[in-house]
Image: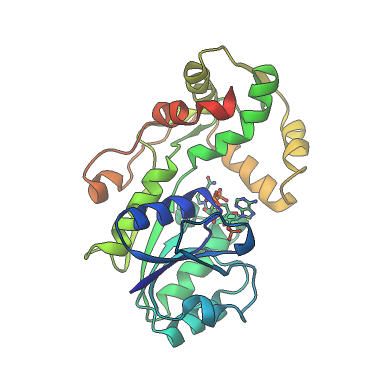
Length: 278
Ligand SMILES: NC(=O)c1ccc[n+]([C@@H]2O[C@H](COP(=O)([O-])OP(=O)(O)OC[C@H]3O[C@@H](n4cnc5c(N)ncnc54)[C@H](OP(=O)(O)O)[C@@H]3O)[C@@H](O)[C@H]2O)c1
């Protein structure tokens, strides 16, 4: 039985692929740019995830389980092709934002919600893995920290529960391989609520050098994000930060229940990724 893993240039997709391979599973690696994949000997790379339906039958041939990144604009095609191919279970990398009250109108939540809704209605078994903010989001600070040991933030006191990509992947792999996870949604959060400033401090500890936080205005941060993100996504991300400004959360996720151990702390993530910030 082959498991199709999508988004394998992404950090979560790659971790899922590596964990499945380490367990001896038969996998096929899917990416919007399969030509750029660096895959272990014997692992087939296929095209998937760039909205084209024509690549789906070949990607899904012989596949019974899929680890799926939220398909942009083509979920109906994916569901039709998955049913045709005989796929039995899809584990979706969703987002905790789907649980918010304005999920129908929030662009980030909605892009995951439409995929959850299509899978729920498909007759294929599903597991929704709903992470909060990825610890890897802090890699956007790596350039300024490397260059000038400084991060410019409009909301330094905005809290999040940053989650390690390996924990998201491990929960997903358990859902793919073990019984008892079908037609269930899991909230995947880090073990502590930390402000952005506290995350910068933990990165500073990991590299062994101080890192300054320079407050900037909402508009300045918006202009910086607009250089690499679309306007609606930028505004939604900034609205999350404004909402969590000075507001710690309760890191009550399902990592402990699924994995039988607590989620990895952000300090561990920072030590493991310190080279990116040096
Ligand atoms: N970041 C967060 O805090 C967060 C929180 C909750 C949910 N999510 C959701 O999780 C999913 C992945 O999040 P992410 O993008 O932050 O992390 P990621 O796991 O690193 O994924 C990167 C994505 O970008 C694609 N990609 C395109 N060009 C790439 C390149 N040059 N290098 C690497 N990947 C490239 C990859 O797929 P291909 O290989 O197919 O191109 C992959 O889908 C999204 O659906 C996101 O909305 C994210």
